[in-house]
Length: 158
Image: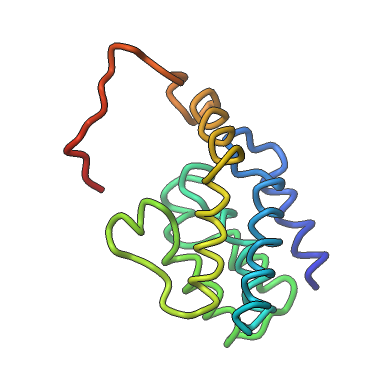
């Protein structure tokens, strides 16, 4: 089931050039599973949520698909994930992202917090810097990496 799910995620994200491709997904999955082991969390839920966490990202698939979790639902149904597990996975995905965390929206379950934290950890360090640059120069970014004439907005809000 997990191999089939990973293949379907690959089909969706394989051509992504915004920093949300399979390399990111697999790093988040690996880190999530390490966190899950340390915290004695449900590894199945963590692994599935980490695989699916970006398949309906609004930056990739648009606002409407993101709101309805079109791809995640299709994948979960295709690989016959139980309804109870689906509800938990979809709740995690709906409540995680950096922009949502700025608004105080965060997953409430241990498994959701693990996947969300692993995703945010991937935004740190060298991978995070590279992903930021990749996003800026992708067809989804604005092409600007650094502009000496733009000063930091110290009053920025979510």
